Image 1 (cartoon, rainbow, N blue to C red):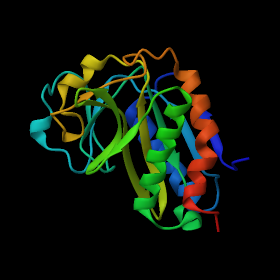
Image 2 (cartoon, rainbow, N blue to C red; image 1 turned 30 degrees about the vertical axis):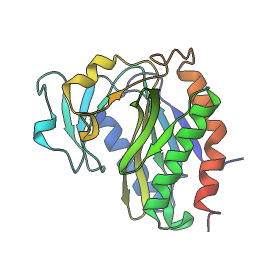
Image 3 (cartoon, one colour; image 1 turned 90 degrees about the horizontal axis):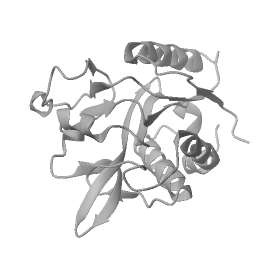
Length: 215
């Protein structure tokens, strides 16, 4: 049994509220006053700008609210139908290796999608998880953006279940213009949010094992 907390938000969470809650939880974990946490939620439609975001990649500035955030990466979209999993783990206990942590997140997504009949893949030089669409085409199904404070992680992953894919057209997602985005629904998979949540919970032990035993 994985000894951490899971919280499922019952309604979409405003981005500033989510950021404030994450920052507080990270402080509490760092101080030894709270357990590690996976927070499953959805956001209302919005764009976020990571630390590497380029202004020219915000194609429609007035479409949705835009929030600057301290996570790595470029512009991303969040909205209804997309499962966001904010992951707050203490890497002081699990090894201070951020690259290994990102690889573990990637494998977590791949394993969860595999339970739903979707083959997710890594791509060299591109963060996130991709789906081969045949004939040389590929689309992104999941994004990753992380930050650490005192070696406690926050932010996390976003997996497209059934969002409005047109909402991604207001940005160059993650700075990559030559490929598209997809979702479980777009791939013809009937799995909903609850099925993905179950798959994420089932595959979390494997993800944590990639980080090693907590010290």
